[in-house]
Image (cartoon, rainbow, N blue to C red):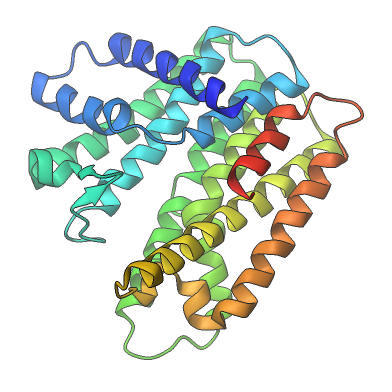
Length: 291
């Protein structure tokens, strides 16, 4: 189910770009399309937003699809910037050159900025198209805040500071968990929470689906780190300890135990909805990622 939804969203994203980017300068448009569309991706965040909304509400309006594209634009903007020499200095992503290698640092920086700005333009347009529906306004606020200094960008900041620190932090657990909850987890959580809020969910159901998203986001990053460590070990490559700060600070045994605990918690949270809602997409997604 996830794979078919991913293919459908790729088509939605291409259509969105055709409408949203036509006035952009050709060089900027080419760079954005390269990172947002042509480079591929799992599309997890926008799909989780769409499927959460659909699980609770049903039919999707056009502006809901556009909000999903805005979420992916935010995510890709962060990857473009993270890959640059002043940040992680990566030359490849998903087996192809990163944006700054392909187009140069200046255009990569501008395309990352443009992607982030495009997301906010799209969120504002969606609010207008919904006739300022308070639920849509609140959902867009949740997404916008998750991308900022108290969310994704805040997590990235603490991550870079920890990498450059000359002394270990006074409370490494607090800082490392802050990175995981925000750099990666904030956008996951906001995608699901915004989808639920826009669908009219509140009270205990909103708390539980948000808890599912929070555990999923943390577990997803732990699994990504674990796979990087094991792949490097199998190929004989050195592992940058800052690519997996949780395992670096707390060890493989605790990292694996935490991953298993969070995966089990997310599965239990989802099971609580299965009697009343169609949770097959999320169940398939958990099986696909955490098999």
